[in-house]
Structures are given as structure tokens and as C-alpha cells.
Length: 404
Image (cartoon, rainbow, N blue to C red; front, side, top):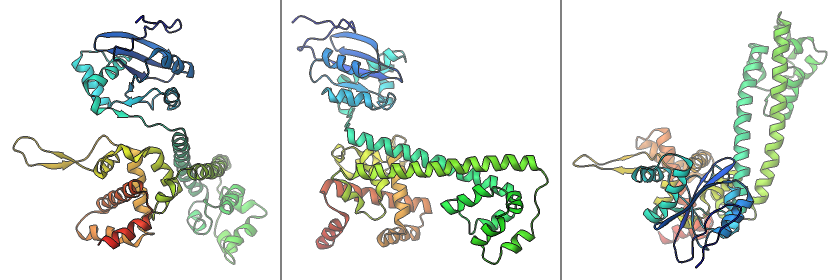
């Protein structure tokens, strides 16, 4: 069979009789592609990161040729969604295995070496390659959830900084004010936007009237015991920073609320969502995060494998005649571990069964974090059960009661 050549890429396409694999090392603006088979290295070239490149690879590679990569998140998931659109199977290689393979083959740690090692992994460790299960709706959900998480994290930092600014501009009076005036409410933010310092409160014409709304009958005594600061420039600087933080917080709250609506709308299209939302402690954001990160539960043959992927299982360490012991995992999905801790913490006040389980572990001598970890593992079992059995939490508990 005659080998064809792509004019644009100048890459020799392997014939259908020669089994090959493609290794991809993604970067921000380009991807390094190595097409390799045990009998011949066809190419190791750099391509621009674009939909056109995915189309060209679909034309160059024989049908069914797998593409292996170490970290598909580096270049974003849109490129690999494009590969999936062209029916190119994609697999993921553990970076440690890729490092070992480069060492065995004496390959340099370059883009070319990384791509070649990923391609060779298809022939050395095919059982250790995990298929990349990409779906457009799940990836869109993952993007929205991560954007919301970053916004919430940044907003928390802004609120902490705002507390610092207001405690400096109001002094000891702020300790009294924050008992009634909450910056997490529109009403509280409106008050501090109008009066970002004690000077603005004392000199403003509506200061006493606005303060009386939060402290009826006490506004006069609170103002009478205070004096304005005698450094007007410093106070103006603090007021400017306070108003800027309040504007950021208000805007972020609105954007986060809009994202919440989009996540809820997108989540309603998943048939697994009602099963997850039926579990006490699992909210919309938690369910969306689970669906986005788990991909498909069929990837995990047992609950122990799923718990290990979530970072909630331990590894056995046993060497020689030493005493075997369990150690912490270092390779796991940190997003899933975090969301299970959030679910466990929220369930303490919503689920009596979770609270009794936590109390039982504390009585056994576990610390708060250890007991919370055990509860998070318990919720991992619940999530695995409802997704594999296609049942709600109530149906699962009813079935368990009948069997016992």
C-alpha cells in the first residue's frame, strides 16, 4: 500500500497494516505530535493548537489509532473534544509512568521526548492508560463550576480585606457595627458604601438616621462616644479602597448568581442529577462538580477504586520483613476530595444519620478531621451506589432496610 503525504504537515501516514499510536504533548499555543509504531517512527512534529490540526490528524491517522497524552488539561479540553468529534480515541498517561518510560528509553525531557514516550506507552503499558471520557455538556459544566469556584474564592479574599479596611477606618466601633450590619447583604453593603469610615458617618447629614435603622434607640449614644480621625488623607485612601472592594463584591455576587442559574439549567439535562441531589448534603454545585469530574462511573470497577481516585482511600505499604502500614495517597483528584469534604461538613447539620456516624467516630478517638474524612468516605460510597444502581438515596435506604 502506498503511503500518503500531507502537504500541509509533511507527515508520512502509516499504512493500515502497521499498528501505530500517536503521542501528544500539549502546550498553550501548540501541540507536539509523535506518530510511532514498533517498526518505524513516522513523525515527531509541532502543530499549532487549532481545530484545523485536529482535522488534519483525523486525515493522517488510520481509523482507530489512539492518541495518548500526559496532561490534556494543559492545552484546554476544547482541542481534545475536537479530536473526539473526529472519532479519534484519546487516552491519558500518568506523568510518573511517562517519566519512567523516558528514563528507560534514554529520551530527553523535551516536547519531542514527551510526545514519543506517550506514544510508546501504548505498546509498553496499555493497561495503565485511562481513556479520556469527554462529553461536551460535562466539560461545559466543569468550566462553569471551576469559574464559580474561583469567583467565590476571590470574593472571600475581598471580604476579608474589607473587614480589615473597615476595622481600621472605624476602629473599635466596627466590632459593634458588624453585629447588625452584615457585608454579605445588599443592605449592609449599601450602608458601608455610603459611610466607609467613622469620619463619613459622623460628618454625613444622614449618618445618625441610617445608623438608627440598624440600632434603634442606640444611634445617638454610639455616635456621641466617638470622634473623627485627624488624618483626612489616610481616611480618604481607606474610603477609596473600601468602596472599591464593595463594588467588586457586589459585582461578583451578581455574576456568581448568574453562573448558579446556568449551572442549574445545565445540570437539569443530566439524568444522573436527581440521584445525586437526593443525597442529604449534596447541593446543585456539589452535584455539578461530581458529574463534571467523575465523567462516567463505569470507569471505576469497584467502590474502592472510586474512593482512591477521590483521594479518600489509603495505600498499603509493605516491604521486606517490616510491619505493613497504610499511607496517604499522593495522586488523586483534588477537586473531588475537596467536594466530598464540603458535602460531609454540610451533612453534619442536615442528616441525622451522618451526624450519628460522625459522633460514633469521635467516640472511637478520632479527631475532627479524621472523623470528617471517614464521613467523606461514607458519602463516596453513597455516590458510587446511587450512580451504579440508578437509584435515589431514599430508594437505596429503603432497599437496605428491607435486606437487613
